Image (cartoon, rainbow, N blue to C red; front, side):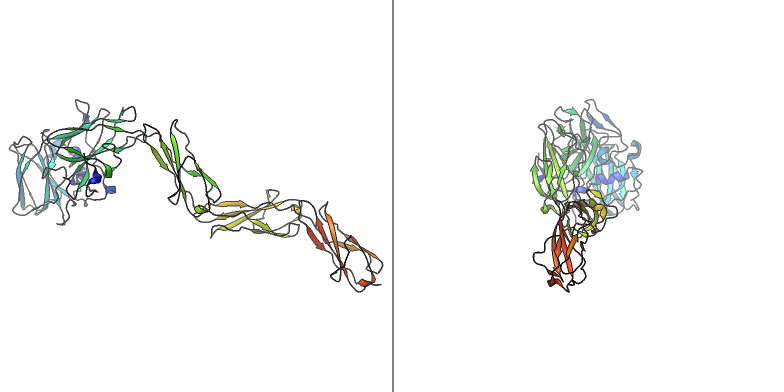
Length: 559
């Protein structure tokens, strides 16, 4: 067996066999597009409309007229209709194609369906050309056939439906069309074909450590003869029976065997435990020897549901991924990614603390579950919204009734817009939703906070709250009682302050501080004659903001 990785070219095309699947219903649309060479576009041949059964040994056998119909799917008409069919592509008759078909024993073979396919070949590109079904005939009792077509490029396919010892094949004896189609001119094309011995690829399909018999979709890929332009094409699709599978009447050549998972509990593979087309091994059949290829699909240790990253996608917050139910004895490994780049490639921790390095990126997590004897399961979560950067807001201003406070959002992701909500002792203040707030008597003796909600397209909408202020103080302008006359006493009044406030006094004459005047009363002296007197009171109380207020001036002092 040979690994595909050693081949010069690993391109995949839809062979002419697949082209024929468009003709399943009445040959209504025989023209098809050019085969695609990209691996991702290759598709399997549908066996819709055919029947299937199990042979004497319990292995899958093709239904309808012959097992090769799964590979060909030239038409799903009744057996009598298949033997002489003409497609819409025949517009004129001026070039004969004739010949003799011999079976694997070298004797002329009757009952062979000979189908002809036309090509709008560009005359240059090898292996890669579109095919259109034209017509089919059946060889006579002496193995001969004749049909006429317009001048153009053609190839032939031979299907020995009545001789299980002979293999079906394209011109040249291969399981795929030849490197180039043949130009058929007015002189015609004489084709003498000798079909090779029939081969089979068969075996059992089981799953998991207990080798449970499985019924699962399988695709046989036919390959060319491994020239420098090597390619393979999906050729024949079946569903295995629990007792096994079989692909029959194969020509000698190289094949790949793709086994799909019957359900999410199992892991699909290519023959010989290979993970994909690029790594797959050839199965070579030759010399009339059948090949047995038993397959055991690994069972997944666990079928994981869709997983999501929970938590807030914001710097400083922790996000997590949770597997709802864990399998006993299994190992769970987590990997974290920022915009697809690993930031914690292998960790037993299902949580991750977001830092400023992840700001502006989207976060995903990958969960890997493994257990001896089982197929490892890997699941990637969906991306989060982009990680937003933020700062806790701060409050500036004097925390006292009648004074305005201002909320400062500070540093956030550029482009963020904000909404605000003010709180008194943790309770939202109705209508207080701007960046400033004027304190009222209703907030007296309460602490104030502000909440800022940042919104930015593509990012998590995020809320940050400030710390609390000191309690809101109640203050009022002090009053001065007494007569501003030399020898009289003036007294400062502090009515309207928060109960329990202690005061410090500062007296002024015409705005100039009076040295030593720091009590609640002041004796007027002759030095103040002609001047007005004011008093500034500084009130303080534990848990409150210290606050000062200055009285209105008295009348000018007289003698």
